[in-house]
Every structure is written in structure tokens, then in C-alpha cells.
Image 1 (cartoon, one colour):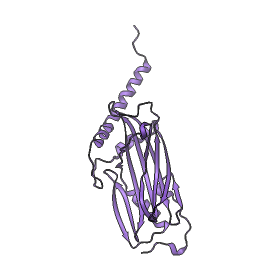
Image 2: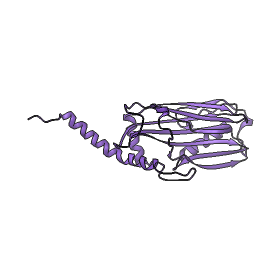
Image 3: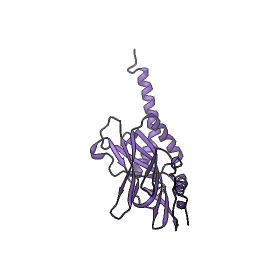
Amino acid sequence: MPLPFSATDLQNARLNLKGAFRDQPLVDKFITIRNTTFSRCLRNELGSLDASEMETLNSLCRRSSPFVQVAPKTKDTALGFTTAEMVFRTRFKARVTPAPPIRVIRFVRAAQINFLFNSVKDEHTIPGYVTYEKGIEKNVRPSPKYVRDALVREFNRASWSYDGPREEFIRGTFENEDTPGIKESALPYGIAADFLIVLYDEQARKILEVGRKMATMAVWKDKTVQFVMGPPAMLVLPETPASATTTK
């Protein structure tokens, strides 16, 4: 008497069962994070990812990832400052309805270097809800080399930080958008971000897609923008006169 299922059906069932065991701990964590009220600017170890979780997510990213596009965006303000952002726009491929129980969660590992009022503010993400640890160097006039080196240093110190989102699907579409960056700054300014986005089914406890992109952006004093798809060490310094070197 023939079996009611084929060998292929059995293999697919095994893969689905294996995937459920692999995905469930992460999805359970995502649900807990989204149900937690985080305080801005306060460290919270829940709002992060450890090495083992990243290993799983990176493996899933190689198997099924959405389309993630990154672009720089700057604008002058009325007060003579500059807004500088990197726009991470994601388009998912999964054939699902963009509504619960299908959910989106984001994490970011980032660093920023901001020059304002003759001081440099450097910061890097720590566990929490888009939480940064900050430092201030007073009476510094940063050169491009200073900005790049400080950005490399802070990015190496950065941890993953929970990044929402409040709007999971833009106007009910299969797209999501994130804009890490400074809202108002003097120049020069630098930001590096390692961006991670996950589409998952919280009811089936299954991860559907994982996207990851890393990008770095610098806006120099003359308002020229340098943008690279990679870590801040990839920034190529503009030629500057000797008088523009870093001083304290």
C-alpha cells in the first residue's frame, strides 16, 4: 500500500520542523522586545543581539533576503546647519499580507561624529532602544582624518540596538524605510551604520526574510558628501590644506 506522502514531502516536513526549532527562540525574543516599553537613552540588554543570534540571522540572510537600498540625504536648515541622513529602504519579497501576524523588527549598530560649538560629540550604539553612549571633546577643530579615525573607533565599540519600527509597512505596502542620521549639525559630520531588518510570522514563529546592509557617510565642511557601502575605514579623505589639521 503506497504511503500518503512522498519522500520529497517528508524531506520538506523535516526542513520545516528544523526551521521552527531554529526560528522560535529568536521570534519569541522579538515578540518580547516589541511588547517591552523601552526608555530612550537608557541601556537595556534586552534591546540587542548576541553573537549566536547574529550567526543565525546571518545564515538566514544568505538564504532569503529582501532588497535593501541605501542612499545619502542632506539638507540645509534655516539656521545654517545641515541635516544628514542615510535612507535605508527595504522591499520584501515574501508572498504574505503586510499586516499582523506578519511583523517587522529592526536593529542597528552605528556610530556618529558631530561637530558643534567648537566641540566634537562622538557616539556609538549600545543595547536599548536606539540608544547611544556619548563622549565630548572640547575645543577641537576636526579635520577629515580626525572624523574618519574617530568614526572607525566608535563604530568598533558599537553594539546592536533595537530600532523599532513604529511603521512596519509603509502605507500597507511591502516596503519599510529607516533614516539613521543627525537632524541638525554643523560640519564636518560622519555616520556609519550596520542595518539589520527581519520579516517574521509571530503566529507561526517563523522568520521569513533577513536583510543586512552596512554604509558610511561623511559630509565635509565644504558640504561635499562622501558615501560608501561599507565600514568607515573605507572613507577616502579629501585633500585639505595644512592649516586644516586637527587642533585642540
